[in-house]
Image (cartoon, one colour):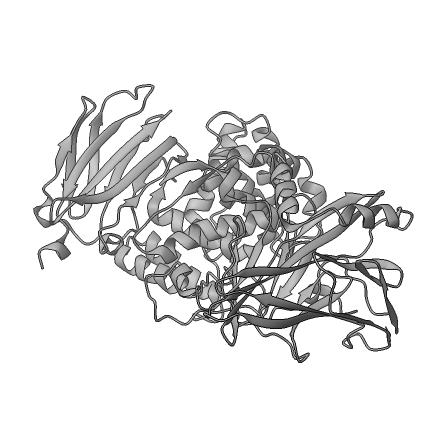
Length: 614
């Protein structure tokens, strides 16, 4: 694992790729036969604003102002078999087949500003590829309806249906009630039909194109869909004129400029790619549903654009980003959440107030230097944590208490002698998502490493790359689940609570079954930056390389493996630093190590897992 720039990885929009034929090779799974959960819809947008659109798994696009559905030549809807969310440059995937023609749909969402207005713009491209050896003629179209509904079922700020809507054509555009709803790129359509409608689901506009494709030829039908106006006094003619100059390629470039710099992220490459998706997909989802320029400005666990569930959620999401090496992205937002804590947390339950201050503590303890707001946060901790409160299901109450006491110490606040012990979460259903998190964390805290790994895999079964973090089939993704999953994965790799540093406390040898390195990362810990890598050393032995940067010595330094190591034999490449290691079962304690040099402490060790000789 290593840190990489996000400029190219986390492209500042969710690009939806709808596909079936080419999708299998894209699935980040080590189990090709697994049935994946797919939400009914995705909300999409850029990091530049809270404007967002929605796309259903069947290909229906909802801008909040109109709903668009692509059609076959006979007017029936073109159904897409599968939807896949990627945060990347656009790559078309085959989605459905019309005879010998492959059909793919791609779209993205961006806030477009012109004429004093700030409206959502969603370019959508229907990609047509002739897979036959003969020239074919294909008729495709798109239908527009007004749409209706509110809440999470539609993008934030969606226009409800007032009882009627009038669709008209003007040049290369379709207007709803006098405002641009759709424009097209390229040649003149074969036909355009517009009408007044009194039902939100009835098509108010239908546009058809006829495309001739030579053998192997690829053509696209591209439209631009508009969201609702946000400024009633804007110059809508100027906004429309600006839209007419836009294409999907230009809007992608615009999004690149919007992105600026988004810090660094951890790149994680274990043998089990679903575990990797748990981490990388979680980061993508959290950031894609927030708003950021050079710093995070807003985060939510709801579909993009909707307010978070409660005030503690943004702090929890930020803590997950900090734990995976993105502190540069969130320093200003952390300060904002501390400064406005009392106002934001008004009305929260005592348990959610605990979640709020503990999440901020998780951020501060990983900063690497004294934080000027530690005293302010320490006073909030003393004020808000006065009774034995329950922690979240994916956390250990002892570790949470330790984190809080660290902030009290850093803030120069003496911990009360009766600072309460905290409690485990209580869940009604052990098979529920909270129940699975609780089972994992209890096993990890009890030192039952193999069981903790099994429980983590149970959690991973709820993941789907087609809508990361869908907690219930048919629901939109939840970034709260993504943050919890990221925290659970980190706790299996590193435990830096209670004054000690333990590496791989819940990692199974199964990570190495495919002989792919389970790479560590430049991951922040309470003691500094830690880098760890597991890899094969010969036919049976497993090598581990540990590196530290900017470290201060922990009270105790442990390395754990499961299953137990045969005979406890350890080969050390000291590099002049590590002098002695003691092995007990599967736990290696580094007893002596020299002072940390500017480049960090580095050593390697070879171990023989029990499974390798069974």
